[in-house]
Length: 296
Length: 312
Image 1 (cartoon, helix red, strand yellow):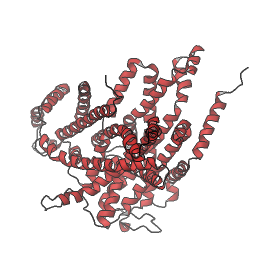
Image 2: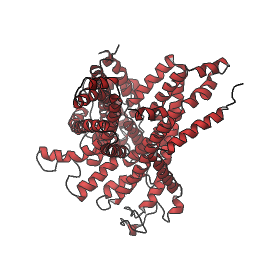
Image 3: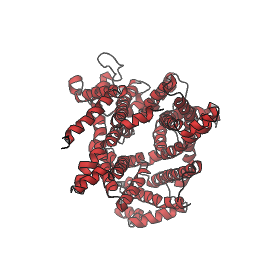
Image 4: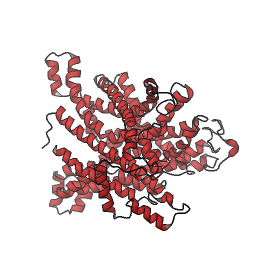
């Protein structure tokens, strides 16, 4: 009798080991901490701040940072710190949701291309090449102009539709190599159909690079959203996002440099943290990668 | 040559998609005339006919493409000047900006990347690795704003924007002073990626067998690093740089916006906000062509540098 190792037990072992490696990566742990704090601040914004993020206070225009307004106020007398907290809700959730769309789409395309190969693969990969040679910021600008700014769902879908290509290449490469392996053949021998092989056997084994790509993708999506909103083509005021707050700052920075410094600082903190987490995940999920870089 | 021909369908597809998007703009190019006193429906129809806007879409596209290839890029709807001329005015400015960025990044990235790899885990390596990570995570436009605040508004060392001081005749030093901040903005972000890439690629190369052979032959360490390692490690850099040309354009777009640099980015920007679609098409077509050719060029240079690669 073979030793009874349930797939769940084996999997838990694998993920547990990854978690341990992740804990050993100090920048990633700090990044996780900072990101969790940012997310909690954004979620708890109404509890933390006594101010309204959109109500104008004409007597409080351009107050310097002080105890009652730790990051000062903007050109309409709104508390900057409050707007940053509320802006974090929009910016962070757009980043996560856009990547969810992109990863889903990229994984589906990569799965089909890698598993079925032949002309489907050729066709899909040519399409990917074409999409990749498009400067996507230009397309985003066109769409932004066309729609006169974007709402959260629109920006999520558009970013998702423009950012799936790299994932699909990753997934395709994984599928191409994994489908030739013995365990796939074994599964086929016992009568598993294509769907079962794809979702039950190959996909779980290609999760590591997908997770890493997704993490780094969130950082990219946050930067793109803020760039678009900065240009005035993304989320429209008075709803604050980190990007559109900086748009006003270009006009006000001579009088009130804090309006230009703080929103960007939060974009930076979020993106740096996510990039560190991505780095840590790569090391944790792909031990071979670490061994390769440490050898010498 | 065969690869050159291979790029043609790609370019056609890109222009067709751009054309499709442009045509679906609500309002369209004649929207500014709507509601103008004295404009009747017949006038609108006559204008539509005069601009060829009443034809079926594929015909409009083909005729646009034909005129485009012949060098007739139409007239700006707002500025009433030939598109080709307007683009020709702006392209050198963007090229100046991007060319300077390109040179600065290469000149800095190669030595920094080499030293960090050779002295891995030294204080210099840690410093560079940390700061490249930071710059990679900084949004370009925020970096630009910070540089303006520090060097333009607080220290007053450098001009806030534009390409030359108003009312002053052309003066090289003046233009260079205006170049510093926008170039620094794009270059710092770009440099991060390049240095990290070159460092990783150098580390990979240093571990190769032929490096040991070179040392075993008794070659000077400097020759080993510069002659053998760097040469091989820098090859993939060519591809990476070419693949990032779209990013460079995007960076230029945002930076031109912040610093008021009169380049293609500004032109595109003004055109988008005013539905000036001949200009839009022109700018996008020029950038697409440049991007596709940058990729082609990278392929060719890559094959030349690394004889193991053969295109069949």
